[in-house]
Structures are given as structure tokens and as C-alpha cells.
Length: 187
Ligand SMILES: [Fe+2]
Image (cartoon, rainbow, N blue to C red; front, side, top):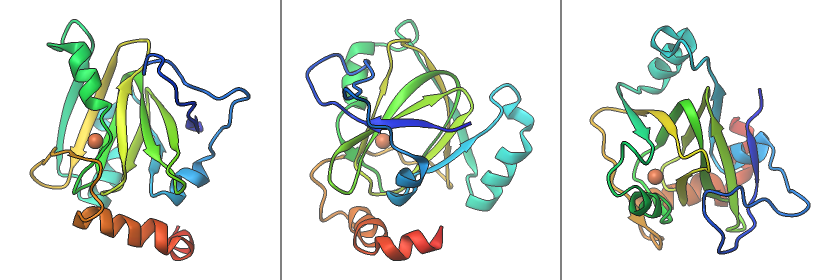
């Protein structure tokens, strides 16, 4: 199963709407890989004993795991939280999410600084590299259950844009923007 992503139509409409251009401009997985995004489709029903998930965790050192259940009934100040998630930021580490139920959008900046919207549904697991500008929102279903993974003790600190001098931003630029030819060969 392929992940669905597209170039965002930027306007003032509700962030939970799809924001597709007319006509739609789909973004293939290869383009997501160029900006450093990793993707797997796993079985969302059997995540406790999922062998593929175990292998990914072992290979990438994702020792920490918890769950994030987001919907208006369970989250205090839901509308405010939504706005916070949607503030453009980076992290010093990867952002790793595996969608077990529901759906939502991860928006990442491409090399031309345009927003690419990635639609995460049950079974989709993505890794955003450290230093990539991104944001998250639920969609109009207003429900998502995410597994969060991390290497070691989790640090969820978000650094809002601009962060051009942040070491993880500089690392990201070196890995995926300046030397994109080399990064591509490595895939
Ligand atoms: Fe984030």
C-alpha cells in the first residue's frame, strides 16, 4: 500500500481539510525519501507482536514506546492543542509515529520550501528526520491513535522556525539539501 501525499494548497481554510491543489499534485514516496522521510506500512491490528515492527525497532534503536490518543473528548483544550501541533518546528531527533487507528496529516517542507502534506492512516509508520521543518494536524475525522517511538529517553522539545543555526537543522541541510545526490545514492 502506498502512502498518500500531495503539494499543499495554502489558504486560510481549516487546517483539518485536505488542502489539495486543483488539479491535485500528488507527491510520490521517492520524493518523500529525498527529503529524508522514511515510510513503512505495517499491520495496525497486531502491533503488539508485529515482527516487522520489532525488526525496525531493533535496527534503528527505538527502545522507547508509548501511545498518543487524540480526540476532542480525551484532550483538554483540544482546539488550542491542534494549533500548537500546527506551528512549524524542528526537533533535535527523529519524529517517529505509527498510526494504529484514525488518521491525520504530517506536513513537511520540500527543498523549495513548499509544504508537502502526508496523510497518515491505520498501519502507516513514518520517520521524520531530525532538523526537518514540519507540523502535524488531525484531519476532519478528529481522531488518531499514534504509537510514538524514540531512541532512549524521549525528548519532545519543539524548536519553532526559524532555526537555521540549530545543529540538527545544519545536519539536515548537509544530509538532505546540499548533498542530495549523495543522499539519494545511499537509498
Ligand atoms: Fe514535531
